[in-house]
Amino acid sequence: MEFLPVSDESLLRAAQVINSGGIVAFPTETVYGLGANAYDSAAAAKVFEAKRRPFFDPLIIHIASVETLNEAANLSLLTEETRLKLSLLIKNFMPGPLSIVLPKSEKIPGIVTAGLPTAAFRFPANETAQKLISLSSGAVAAPSANLFGALSPTRAEHVRDSLGGEVDIILDGGQSQIGLESTVLDLTGGGVKILRHGGAPKEAIENIIGSVQDLTNTENDTAESLSSPGRLKSHYAPKTPLSVFNLEDIICKPFEENSAWLFFDGVSHNAWKSAHTQQSREGAVKVLSPCGNLPEAASCLFEILHELDNSSFAKIYAQFAPQYGLGAAINDRLKRASAL
Ligand code: TXA
Ligand code: MG
Image 1 (tube, helix red, strand yellow):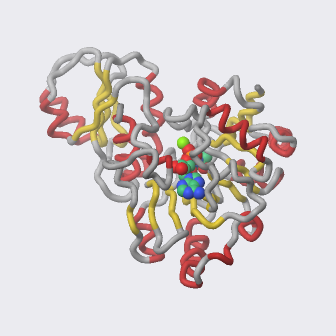
Image 2 (cartoon, rainbow, N blue to C red):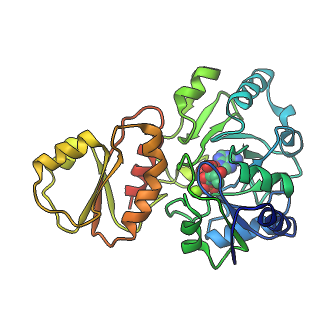
Image 3 (cartoon, rainbow, N blue to C red):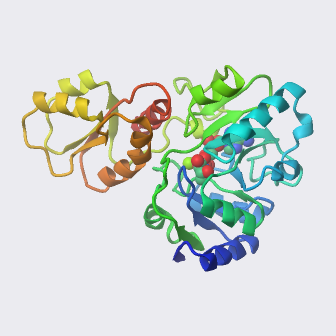
């Protein structure tokens, strides 16, 4: 494995590796991805193996030009109304943190989409990701670069620590700015459906194309019933047991010396502090955003979870974020992190 800072030279090497069937971890503005040539089934198989990802969980295809959709998707299968919505979504969210599920073209091998006739497409805004995609196959299949079910990586070091022995190159592009995976939106079948909350808030999408159906409720999910396996209940989980509560419930919990607390904002942290005067362990109390700013909170969620998870606490108590904007994605990840 080569761990390389981003440069023209390392980008060229990484592109060569992708073109010759290898796998490369690369930065995007959401989380780090583990990429392979999306037109190469043997290369895509390596991604599943490296992540220990079940073959029923499809990969997202990353593009660096909207024109690639003409090749990798089959847009002729969409109704005129859906095509209109797609063009509005492209205009507003590509590049950006939105993955759009569309009918796939014959060029995309079945392994990439787990046998589905559809594929999720994302045009990342991160410049390194765009260059890597353009310099290589133009369509790069990439899930998040973590072991299946584990916390997503927001730094190259996170990838090195969990998948270092499995990948050919890790491109180090620093910390991911958004810090949460893309929103997954399904445009196939009737209507528009959100399959996963993420970096593009539902409200922002509805402002552009009108109301969308929310299929992200995790209550009754089973592997069979899921149209998007990223909706599996236990996903994005730290090794340390985590539970998530409203502030009042966290305040009611008795203090525990070996536990960690993760608050949404400074006001909540202060409220808890005035109810618990005991000395907590160093690094045991974290605040996602002192002033309650949702993008800031989203950008450090996985970062802080990685840190707490590596500090041998017995438990993590986390507070829900407000349930709007990026808060929906933050709460979704916290709920999944808490499912045992
Ligand atoms: O921000 C992101 O989306 C990151 C970066 C690397 O782009 N990628 C990512 O990939 O989070 P992954 O594999 O961890 O999650 C992809 C999600 C899964 O929930 C998967 O089931 C869903 O997208 N997905 C992919 N193709 C699909 C399809 N054809 N139909 C429905 N869901 C699909
Ligand atoms: Mg993932």
